Image (cartoon, rainbow, N blue to C red):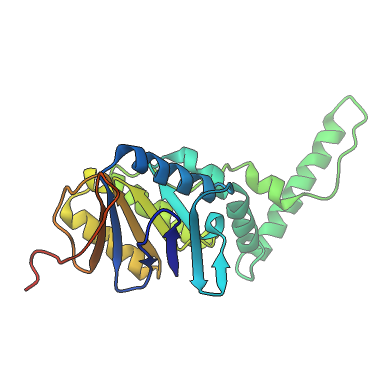
Length: 234
């Protein structure tokens, strides 16, 4: 896959042997770059084009996620609510759990029948239990409450990898929050999921890790390219 912006010559190539970083020293262009990428991820227009090949353009809103705030919490569950319930519903009707699911539904219907008999009112109730509605009572959610910010980021990435088509994770100034070792762990985790990291920074803050390719956009919007290596490598 390749990502380009109409104001830059830099072509960002995503493969399993590369970590892409862009450093934008101009605050004005940094704002423009982040805003446009965020807009396109949310289905609006912008200056980016993501392609799988010269003849096949990809939908950025389906294939990329931009993480500006690295503090991932329970509010991020909204993105997965429907697909999570559908996944649990499928699990509840699997060969291993189908019998228990039917038994629970039967118990609930018997309980409803008992309530109608005990009530002083003439009551009616449905004899069909909607499984999705039943499962929603448990308020299932993904766990983004680890004490480690990095672990919550990784849990969020894994959820996106499981429940969406997202394969490119863009981060704004993530090097301000993570140590050198944590960045390497983040990269290795993404690689293990056959996904890609794209780091957007406003200045260099840490040594480049292994396999990192960097483009520096200076204050005059000149493009400077360099390859970084993990400092322990020869």
